[in-house]
Length: 173
Image (tube, rainbow, N blue to C red; front, side):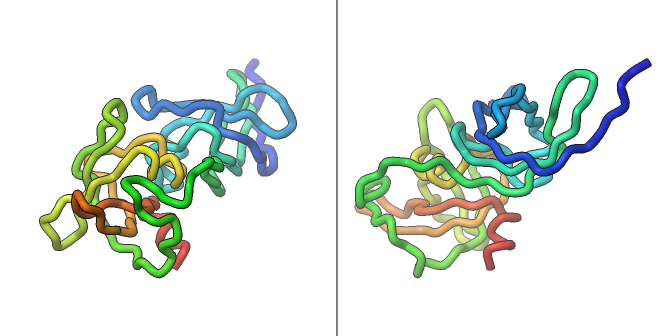
């Protein structure tokens, strides 16, 4: 006879690692218990396809015969990064007055550390760097993924200053 599945309260923890290609990762809870499985489907229900290692995360969990696993992501806080006053390609870090616009990922290569987005209704590519993604709590982006983005200008063209999942951006406004 299998042990019945039971729900537990909200758990606060840190993303140990998450691999979007494998479709899962693990969270370490504050109580230093066993690692908690975080499946890609649970993360997608929150509106993201990836999460940066070291992010603080609030999840609801359940205990199963195979261990503890997340059943809902409640909140994600990107890891603290030691950045200078300037961001990627010399972009300033204070850009709260720059509006969020809807975009879609054209492609992103985690190995190369960059990719491109398109803003809805515009043909111009927007450069997105891995450092921006990490600062925003992502570890990767998938082609076709809907995002909200703040865009800046550099000597080399337009670039993403901040990227949020589409669902998270809707909650902010």
